[in-house]
Length: 386
Image 1 (cartoon, rainbow, N blue to C red):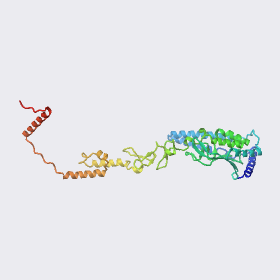
Image 2 (cartoon, rainbow, N blue to C red; image 1 turned 180 degrees about the horizontal axis):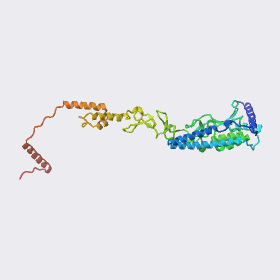
Image 3 (cartoon, helix red, strand yellow; image 1 turned 30 degrees about the vertical axis):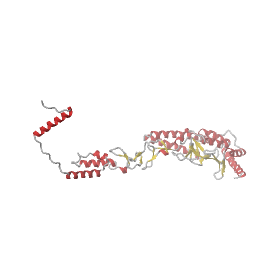
Image 4 (tube, one colour; image 1 turned 45 degrees about the horizontal axis):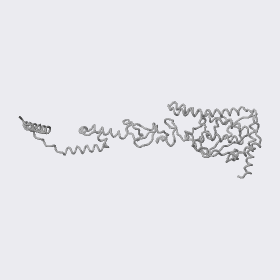
């Protein structure tokens, strides 16, 4: 776009702004304000957070309840600020500044080109659109933003908004593209009065610079989502915020879990939450429902079958030990087969020959000889009778 066309658009925008200022500055008793000027969305968020806090306290989720209380306090603070602004408009208090002139408004629009690299007039939406540079807060790249000011509703609640161009939304709430921006609404915090004063006086450059400065500044007390939780995910079990890369999803209900709350099936290695996992009644290990049979895991079920087999085998339960076969990795089928082989070998092996009984004299002679030999080994000589 050449300079002359750009200047003509700026002049048309200044004319629309002048008409808007003339309309809003007339303190008539019949003047009414838009119904959307009341912070209805803020109030609904407060009610929703209050319900979440009550549920967290009811189920004993202390961390989640604390997080809800903190977010509730921040939302109440922003709502109070918007209510104050709404009350100021509703009371129709006369501004101390005079109505800005057409020449002043045109000069203000021209001055925007010196402060911002991207300035345009949206002729369809009737807005002044100013682009910012990429915004990085505490190492998190939030991308570029557009600050949009309505030419028809300047000075009225909701007359400006902030739109992300390269959105990098927070993980807890993908509607929050900046700690102080939810949807296209900016929570100006302490900059509310400065914005109101700039718009009231027609100082458009100061208005856009103030909004940009708010975007470049992080205030944890008025943030919709804290930067420390930007890439975090709330654990569905304990409510703690964990980094998305460090959390796990239950493969049954898809609930996000922190490392402390996640469980693993010892059979198929799937990740489970506490509600979707079962415990073996014998060894207390965690398993999914598919890997348990009669509340026993495969290993304990095999041991039970083997124990029942031994209990029914009276001839061999004193010979073979259950622990021996478990330690050597034998299965029930292998154990049974080995026992059958051992039975067959015992039946085929002949009994050892019976040794004939020795006489009393021979036994006495052997005893004496053995005693003499022992004495010889112990003393180094044989004792002869006297």
